[in-house]
Length: 367
Ligand code: ATP
Ligand code: MG
Image (cartoon, rainbow, N blue to C red; front, side, top):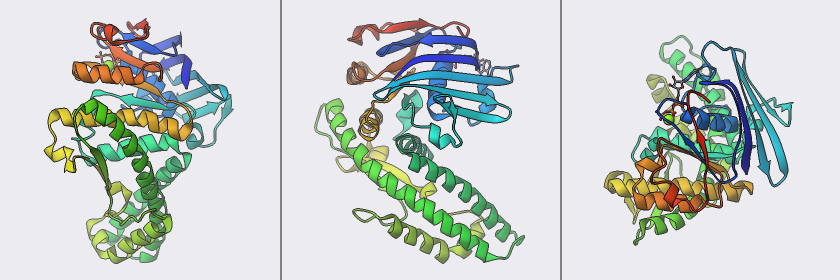
């Protein structure tokens, strides 16, 4: 898919912007603090209705303004789709083909993006929350069902944690409501775990192929999905639901003492192994980066496999973080295949590596 047009009104430091993009490589070049990342963020927000930088939508609205509007046009096999998002103090509105969508989960998936920022190089090394976020964000774009289930799961998890706290402090005594919440949480949790396992299997296959070429020597990359339940092949939602429910029932007293939910997909992790050894603990800096790069690139292929379309790729300052060999690998993997937006403060080093002539946008003070 291709994002052919983007219009911004009062988004971050852009008052009014209207721009046509190239289907190939779009380079956003400018000094620091001019609006390069803001523009990438706008594309990301248009795809996912929320930012990768903040959970507070208010920050997206230009200072002193009350409403921000983003409109875009996505070209896909099925034709051209206009998208529109409006942020105001009343919340956000999302429109596809000029029709307002009742649920944001119905909107997400029209435009698929993969963002690669320097912090993604910590995918392997960083905290488990980072890898869970990675799974939710990627799989949520590929499947509305996944997105819906993880939204429901989060809501019920919050309620259940609040209720556990009330039981802990003896403001409540009734365990029947806790069991109702446990049942709902187990149901959504099981859906998430089974979906993650299935998506990870596919992602692993793509990442292995890429890793073989990037690593250039005999290294086999494998994934290990760390979850508290036992997964059979193929794993059934019913079986996982039962296991989660048992965990909740058998550990009621412990969870009340802790005042929070101890079991479920919010505790999952993902381990990357090279030749069967954990990259997080044993891998060199270079191996950790190569693994992160392989996983990010694998997402492109997985998304195409799942949706029938290549996503668009957003690279924020990432090239400067990669050595020459990895830069070349990244740029050759994407060219002629994926519409790309990349930010940089200088063109040197990039231009030579591009087969296609990039379209260059000079960004200065939000214009
Ligand atoms: P760098 O090269 O340092 O990464 P950049 O071009 O990517 O710079 P951006 O992150 O896009 O810079 O930010 C540009 C400016 O946008 C910042 O200086 C910030 O002050 C401004 N900005 C951020 N949010 C808002 C907002 N809601 N309203 C107006 N301006 C904002
Ligand atoms: Mg930036």
